[in-house]
Length: 105
Image 1 (tube, rainbow, N blue to C red):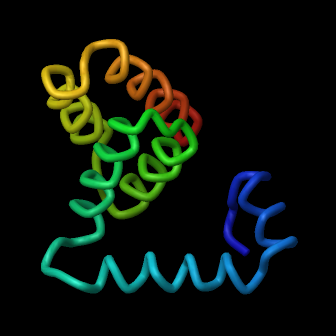
Image 2 (image 1 turned 90 degrees about the vertical axis):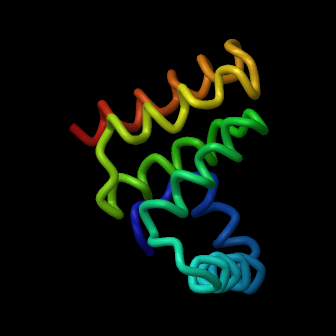
Image 3 (image 1 turned 180 degrees about the vertical axis):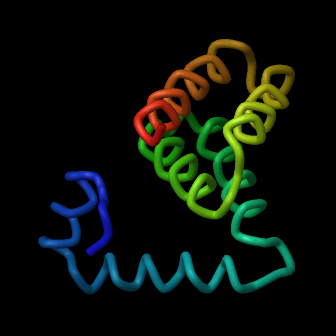
């Protein structure tokens, strides 16, 4: 298994079939349209920030970086949300994104 967070590994050990189906769904939605992985993960990052999902923000920042996104693109995607989801939610997403970006550096 890839370098997944502890919670994801725990869920996979308990619910292997469900998690495999979840992974297949993720692959299918990425393949469903013309967006490249980098773009798709930036869209998913915005959704994760909007729902204040810390784990999903970390995950999509990691995936966006692996797909070739630059930290500046990630930060731009998040700053675009300030007027939509509000400063506190965007600021929280920035802190989670920074943690992941700085860990990768």
